[in-house]
Image (cartoon, rainbow, N blue to C red):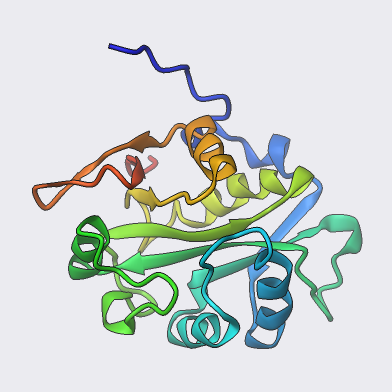
Length: 195
């Protein structure tokens, strides 16, 4: 067996006061989505287009979180420099993700929970956080520590070598078992409810 290296920045241990003290995380508004998708599209193969992202955010505002450097952030006119996008999936949505039957480029909204509903899993739909913006993942983890997301496992399907390294550096493990399916294309971060 191959011994895995310990996660460099384990998601469960990240302190936002340390990793993101110069960053702000906020829910992306519909008007800023074109800008955010435009920033990331050259770097994320097969990424959802602006229309699909807009449809998802109008269904559940928690799905896209914008990132900005604190010294550039204007609350009256917030502009994101990056983002963390997630899909809070229903049990059927999580099963479809495991079975490779989930269309991430144009998600079926019946598989995504509505605001306030507890999901079966949080699918990390896309992250664009180059350089120092990467620390915003700690702010995101603070956000999803509260209901309805508390204790819900995170799932990711990296499609670049950088994405694989990022997942492994954060402590996600490859090949979770979901509904009896070994999902070798997915990574999982198992969470417990914070006390």
